[in-house]
Length: 353
Ligand SMILES: NC(=O)c1ccc[n+]([C@@H]2O[C@H](COP(=O)([O-])OP(=O)(O)OC[C@H]3O[C@@H](n4cnc5c(N)ncnc54)[C@H](O)[C@@H]3O)[C@@H](O)[C@H]2O)c1
Image (cartoon, rainbow, N blue to C red):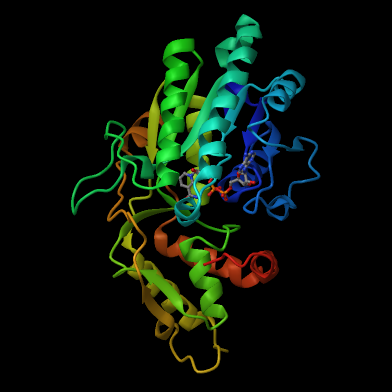
């Protein structure tokens, strides 16, 4: 991106689904240097980064965002121009089963990063201060649920429903407070549901895919009529890059694909694509839709999310490239062609449900 093409970007959570897509983009499509700080929790996977791991502009640090000393050391050593903060516990169901890690990483970890960045920023020379930015990557789930109509805008009130979304909301508030009170230069983004390659197979699309290929039942919460707005992860990553480099300081940008689908529609579309792609179906299966099974709804399940992305479109010139149909087809192809990536996870994690 023209004026600042050789910056150093500290990415937290870069071994996760969105973070690894961001780092592959930064290394392949820009000339920035990347420092990836990741704790490698169950969701972190360095195999998502093998295509760029030997690039000399890429550096991996195994560590926890709650470790203030480590963060301060990294900031002094690498003097990043931008911090893009993605590290989080990200799965709603896990947050319902046990919220402690969500409070620790998503809230305390964000606080530790903000404090370290505040100290770092205060020590920077004026020139570096003018370019430094802290970007908090957040979710549309902070806004709670919508009824049948309407869209989340950047001014929608915060009404999080799950421990996950409440912890992300708390982190958003901390980031804004550090901007208002300490003048830390921040930008925020709140994005809808992502899908694409390298997504941990506990999330809806890879979960349904791997279960279908194994001939297992495809669990759908409640009646499957909950609506989500789907965005391909590579479109999210391009939006993040624009927000981090060009977003107006102190501002928030909503990011979404304009692809509203019920969960049942998503699962049905996956089954129909698999019906044409997989000729050698699991035993007893003529149509993958036979595997759809409705299960007890998730407590506090939000009915509908939908994003008004006009601000980022108008101010930063962002548009999604992938339609849901093209993105879903290419995503399914990726999982079908890379079974070793998700099979290893499934073999070692009994919780992919
Ligand atoms: N996936 C989506 O649909 C989506 C949508 C909107 C926003 N987001 C946000 O994007 C970010 C990334 O989401 P994701 O889907 O890639 O999540 P993910 O669960 O796939 O990855 C999270 C990464 O953070 C790392 N991590 C967790 N705790 C850490 C800690 N204490 N210190 C350092 N690293 C730690 C994990 O090892 C993992 O690599 C999150 O902040 C999430 O809220 C995701």
